[in-house]
Image (cartoon, rainbow, N blue to C red):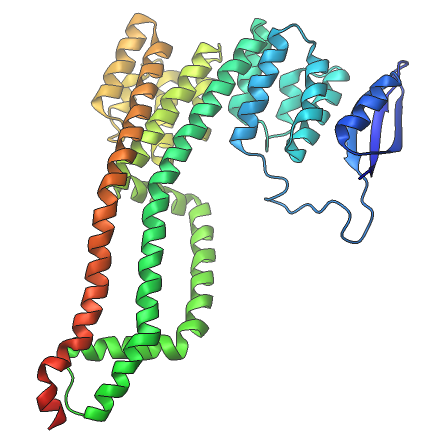
Length: 407
């Protein structure tokens, strides 16, 4: 089924032209334009009104994932390494990228480069796709004439970040789903099962045990007000929490709480250390100045507690101090990390030491996630047994004194 596309092109004389073309896909439009000797700068589907036009939902349809950036970086590096020109590589990537938001941004980057802008400056105009880390490494690659190498290191770094993030998510997802299931079972019992016992005990009369009374009161509350109060309260709580976490104070407190959390705190700490070491290592190896690298690490480390430690390091370096000494003052950095960084500074192999630290903690996270998966299942079964068992015991306690209730 063909669609109408609006395009912007540059002809052989350098003039900008606009027009429309009917075709089955963006790639077919681009191919036809090139056959005419035109250079595509931008191709978009034409909105036709009603429900046929392209619908963009902020945060969903325009979302650019780390995985998309990793694929783009690896393909870009391969093309540059194979001898393709920068403009041709960007043009091909713009056509073949599945993510429409990223494809549109690549097209705009290509247009800026064609008008004389450097690649790093063009990418810097799109922070939603290209982070400070990305722009700085591309700039270093351009300056040193090793753009393909910088892009390949970026691809590897982003892939490591995606892998680490997926491992942490997998560790968090199972217990959250299990606790949600426990909550649903408990709510179901309170709404549908406990009221049956309430009617029974009301007809029998007598004094009920305190746990049974408390359970019946909770059940009555859920039956009368559960949906009316619970849903708005949950939505309001979620919105309030999101707002709180976005504030500097809230973010700092939440990050500190995550590091102190039992079981999961170790995963959060080790993943933050791995991200710190991996990013810092890649930046230094790419030739980014150390103060600029520390600035970027502060923005990308993902935890305010670790970020504050990095800021102390930056202040110490400005004073002419070492990198390792300020880190020793922050408990989030284990002595091993501090000592390895000190050795790296002394031997002039800091980037290598940081890479080894990153690899060590990435393996540690993987080991912790595997151990957690085997530990959390029996733990959650025990929790479910305690919750459901306590409710059943509270319900059946009057049965032990049923004769007295009947009298």
